[in-house]
Image 1 (cartoon, rainbow over the protein chains, first blue to last red):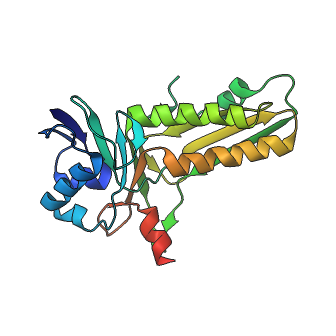
Image 2 (cartoon, each protein chain N blue to C red):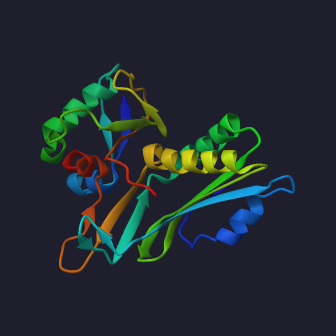
Length: 81
Length: 142
């Protein structure tokens, strides 16, 4: 299955793009995807725990299983206001 | 309704949009770009958002405020783009028959924005590289 990853703010700077499409195994969870990203992006390795994450614009937990076409955004610490 | 905007906030219009004849109290919170942060001078802040999600969260916060404060009407607007010192970045207006609910809803509104709306600040100041503001790191440093 394929999912679209979105990157914002410091995460976009670290990855060098604002989005990418990834091919994942069926049943991949959000937490497993984060571990895969951590392995490839040194900036992410500094995070001791998974940052906030949204799937299709809604906050989800790490156990969330991803589905074909999902839009996934790991969110750096937000700072609105 | 667009709650994120690249153009300046119009506070008087926002208050006028919110208020009803039965309201005896208007509480308005306005966030402003200040000229310093962590002891360093600030010239401007670029606000970036996950636009679609931020709109949904702002809408959800307004609806949750309406549930929590039934007599109150609350509206929230947030700027995106580059703002200079003194410009208004966020506005929360809460109108209610009485002040206690107006104040409470207004406070809850801005705290919810800070807690869950996906917006980020790129801070710029003289003689230093632009930096994404990280409130969690600042909390850890205090």
